[in-house]
Amino acid sequence: MLDTLLNPRVVPALPADPALFTAHERAAGAIARLDQALDHHPLLPAFLHRARLEAVRRQAAVDGHAIDPWHLAAMLEGLRLRMDHALRIIDRGAIFDAARAALAMHQWIVEPDFDQEGEVQAAERHLAATVPGGLLGAAASLWSWLQDGGTRPPIRAALIRLWGKRRLLRVPVPLTGPQALSAEAPELYPDWLVGFLEAVAAEARDYLELLRGLEHSWRTARSTIHSRRSTSRASVAVDVLAATPLLSATTLAGAIGMSVKCASELLDRFVAEDVAVEVTHRSARRLFGLKGLAPLRDVVRPPHRPDPHRGRGRPPIPIVDGEIAEPSRPLPLLSPVERSSFDYSDLEHALAQLDSQVRQTRRALAALMRGDAFKSAELPLDRHTEILR
Image: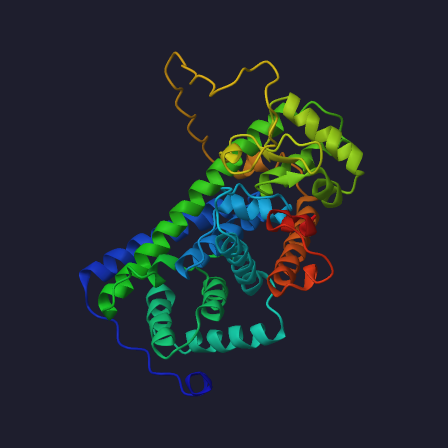
């Protein structure tokens, strides 16, 4: 690895392939549309928070650690995952290992430590040595890095920084084209370049849809609470709900600077006003999500409460009459003039608190995998997430 960093292989020449330039055009167009939509957007910090979690989930899946994004969100809040009782202990451990790997990738992107920063800077120097600029040069340089035995995490972080340095994106969107590193990716150099550019284009389009859905739910929630007094923290609470998939009253209280009791009452009010949905229905550590952003109820485990009026045997399958309503299409993005009517000055501070929650969970999962947290007491495995609370 040291020889690779000191004497990197010369980046191979770009092939004169029409498919390559077509893929380049699509990727450049998708990135330009995403960059334009994110320019001075009020939900930019919230979008980046969600996009980073989605990026590390995709990267972890490509690297062999499959984890559902809502499982990851539930673990960030210390909630027990929905697991089959017949699931083996080794399989349950694999889920925790996948979450730990995903959060380790999050660290590479957001705040690498001293050693990681050195590797990222080495990857940046490798990318900077590329003769052609832009997407094509980055793709060729990434290929040579991987062929020389370079590891994936530092080059992914370096790519995110490269897009800003070469003015392709004005904000650090985690755009790395992870599908180009999957087992199904082409092996030949020209085909791999096309595959990487197509993966980047698809990822940029997915992020644009994420932004549209985020803004739609946010605008709907904001319009519901618009009549509150100016000193209310409800608007900031809606912004934080938009930023994180699952949220507890404890996390919300720390993010917006209010008591846990007041945060709990505020979330209950959001549920009553159809702004948010409660996804756990527990007496303690209740979790909430902004309505319309994800099918959260299918992921978390509600407590078992038997119906006292039900007899023995299986309950009958309910028959629902009528057609299923189609989901509403996302509204168009706000114009810069419309965005200026919202005050989102407190959102960055709230997102910093959420990033702190990610760091705490990462440390807790690392301790869990080492066994440090359970040397003094033996706990059932399905209670291990209690340490994340």
